[in-house]
Every structure is written in structure tokens, then in C-alpha cells.
Image (cartoon, rainbow, N blue to C red; front, side):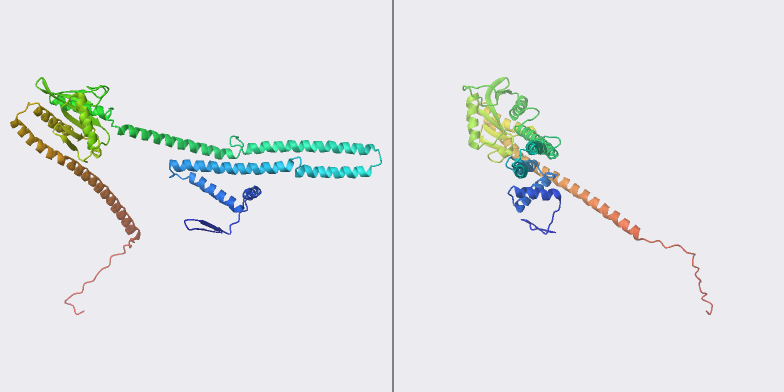
Length: 431
């Protein structure tokens, strides 16, 4: 036998199978109308699927697909086997079947012979024989019917995967256990996906992004002496409008001179979208200044950490879990000072000095992200160097051990013999 594989097909030559079960199954398939090649391909396909089911690297989707294919193949094979057996048994024991027809024919011939032998005689033997033949025929027919029914029940039991005595029970149990395992994997993946989606909405310390952002803003406002209040669940000046997650009453001393509004979003918005949020929030909360907070810097329209909409409106990429609160502190005071300037609470001299300081702070903030990225790169590079150094040290250690072993195994120690006495010649002698 030879087997060749070229990537697209498997070529099997001169292969003979003598297993009784295999030969019987091919005979049944042929009686059912299938060609030997077709039935061989079906068996190989089913076997390949069963082998694939045992692979420990198969993922949940491949396992589930294999289970469905195996179930379909088993059902088709079982149905074909059952139909073939039922067809043969029914044809064999039916009223017009071969067995009953043959027996009736023999009985009729025998009866005819007896009648011809006793045609002109009213013999009690003839009547007794005919009666016996009739009774024998009835008993044979009753026994055939009983045996056929018993055979049908045994076949049904054998082909029922739920029956404990069925040879298909073990395979069915394995498929059920595999199906349960797939369901557990799917349930675990569903839970992980659900948890990941829930976390992505912005959970931080048990709060969603909006609540966490409001808390951070309240800390910054309190440090500046201002009053910050969460308003995301409360309608504002416009009916049924809840735009504006928090408002800040900007105070000078104990008097309120301006108001700012904050809106937090954990999704990607365009610049036009942020301008709509600014206008709607300001109008709904009666505010002069606007601070927009976006959780991910990747969701910022400009790709940068800060986007200036106008002198009193700034959008900041700020994640309370990872970003420094000083970034929010800086943006807060930029908007706050511009609001107070518009309210006439800061003179031109102070404004010039404040603008100079703010420009320097903004430039420093611009390099903040770059420093953070560089620090991350350095940390990653250091980790990589450490791993490579450990690998190199381990490789050197293994090579040294191997070399030491080779040297020790190949070194032969020569035995130490008696000392050799060297004679020194006298330079004054003739010899």
C-alpha cells in the first residue's frame, strides 16, 4: 500500500481491508444504492472530522462546527443503515417476501403431491396431514412475525443513542460532553466580552466616565475656591434638556462672577459635534465657559490632547485613571481666567502676565505626551534588554556546562610511575 499527499488530494493505491465490520458496512452501503468510492469518501470524511475533534488547539468555533458536521454524518449513516436493514428485513419476512413465498411454495407443492396421492380416497391420513400442514404453516407464519418484530425492536434499540445498550451511546455521550464544553467556552467568552464592553464605557473606581470626570473637576474647582455641582441627571433651562454634566460657579471671594459648564464624552466626536455640545451646554446651563472632556486621545478630532474651540471653550483628552490631574488643572484655569476677563474682573496688566504664564505652561504640556511616550519606549526597551540578557546568560551557562562535561569525559589521567633519576655529567671528567 502507498499513500501520496500533494496538498490538494490524497492518493491511496493497492490497499486491502479484510475487517469483517468494514466489509459488512460496504455491502450494506452497496445494497442501499451507494457506490464503494462514494461510501469510502464518506467514511474518510467522517474519520477526519472525528480526529479533528480531538485536537487540543481547535478553537471554540471549529469544535462547534465539527460537532455539527459529525452529528449530521452520524445521523445520515445511521439513517442509511437503519433504512437498509429495515428494507432487507421487511422484504425478507413480508407476506410476499422471499422467506414466506418460499415456505408457502414448498407447502403447496407438498400438499399437491399428497392430494394427488390420495385424490380418490377419503383417507383420514390425508385429512390429518392437510390439517397438520395448515397448523404448521400458521405456526411458521406466527413465529416469523414474532421474530421479525423482535428483530425490529433489537435494531431500534441498537440504533437508539439514548439506550444504554446501544453502541452509539458512547459516541453520543462524548458529543454531548464536547457540546457542554463548547457551551462553557462560549459562555465564558460572552462574559469576558460583556465585562470588556462595560469597562470600555469608562469605569473608574466603580464609577462611569461621566461621574469620574465630575469628581475630578470638583477637586480642581474646590482648590480654586469655586463651587462645582453635578447636573447630568437634572434638566437645565431648556425643557427636558440635560446637556451639561456639571456646572462651576466661578467666584472671586464670596461673589459669583461667571459660570462654566463641563461635558464628558467617552466616544469619538468631530469638531462640529463638540461645537454643538458647547453651544447646547452653554445655553442649557446659562454658562460663559465650556470644558469638554474626552476619555481617549485617539477619539480627539485633531489627534492632540487639547483642542481650542474659542477663548472660553477647550476640549481636553483626559482619563482620570491614567492622566495627571495637573493637566485638567491647567485647562480649568485657562477657561476660568478667560471667563473672569470677559466679566471685567481682571485688568489688562494681569491678563498679559497670565497669558505669558499660560503660553509657557501650554508649551510644557505639549511635550508632556512626548515625554510620556518616550518613557514608555525606554521602559519597554529596558524590559527587552533584560530578557535578552537573561536568555544570553542562560545560553552561555548551558554552553559552558556542555563544554565542561565534554572536557571531563575526554580527559584521561596517566598513572604516576616511579621517579626518574637524572645523572649529571662532570664537566671536568673526560667522559
